[in-house]
Image (tube, rainbow, N blue to C red; front, side, top):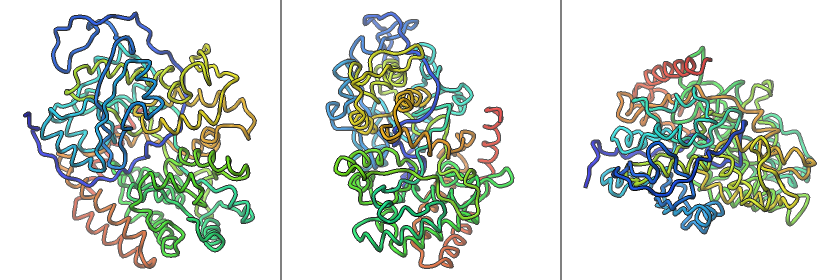
Length: 562
């Protein structure tokens, strides 16, 4: 039994970043690598270096079987039980000779990771998780992950579509690349914002919903007229979903990302400073506390699961839905509600703002050229090169197109001169919506630069009323109302660094403070709670942490040429 060099620190980390619920994202074009097929060759390499292809040749994905275990390092999510339970995985099994064996955390990801670290023989072959999760950094520090650099030229989709400057930000301290990014992009990708129940809105007279005063009045009206409906659904509170979107509307150029675990600060005078003292943050918390006190927010919003949120949206039990990734559930809900009533469904509005602010300087979400989640290949894997080849294929034209539109021959057939799918006269919008929703949970790698132009190619050819719900509102609302936060990438603290304890202390303090202040009994109570949090944060060396992150942020801007 091989022991890790350093023990796992038990942490209770919330997923602060934009959740991986994307129905699509940004822009570019490209080719799948199509090298000559090679049969399995005698291989003298051992362990994690084994592969069917000679060192100077690429292995063609699908030319021979590949099997690997996969684990999602989130307590709120597991992969499907079987490959047959998911359209994309089923396609891989039946057409590409792929066998994926899911490993489930069942809500106990921290404990399961501790087991992996204590006994590396139990380590999964593939780990999908938050790019900034301290456990991923521990795996790198303990030499448990495979460096991906040797594969970048042999399987070129990642290298082709990802900006090389952005890739530099993804590298670890040793200069190597261990993380395959999910939803990397060169254009806005945000799916954050506000979704409104179409039928309820019409029945209540279609009032203005531009400012927080407008929203408050509307939510009160909903509560009065619809006793069985949730006026405002803020998604999962413990993951800073909806409240981050609300915070962004209380200040021009506020960043949703300010509340994330890898930033935890607001930008002022070109420096990161405490958000506990930020006037717009305090104002947003007082607003949320008022909504909570008056039962205009779901009272279980802090603890509810992703499945619970989805059920509410799909069944139309919500009047307004706000979060960092609203289009997946809202698209499904719109489709389901319109089946029973063509006048039902959902639409999106421009991000709500404090009265007097410039609407064009309000950004409900942000986008990072590196996406947010990552996939890593562990040294437990027998064929890491094959796994990389599979991941790279998934982010190329064929993989992306199949995962979003189904197998070739139905909704699409062949590619045009720009490597975009050619859609057929049999294109079925309802089927495509169902495919995209079903495959969301297995989109562990995604190439926004490719898939967004592919989606918009078809959407823009249709009259407005027939356009794909998610693609339409991303184009018209969520992308234009997002800003580029790539420079704030990679300013996180490694768990065993001098500020590692500070980082975790601030993460825990933030969760406690957000929960307490959002359920406060008065505005004065909110101020008291945030004052106490600021004092405690400073005792943890919060200011020093922010100074360190400011230096990293400035360095990133230099790399990106900003």
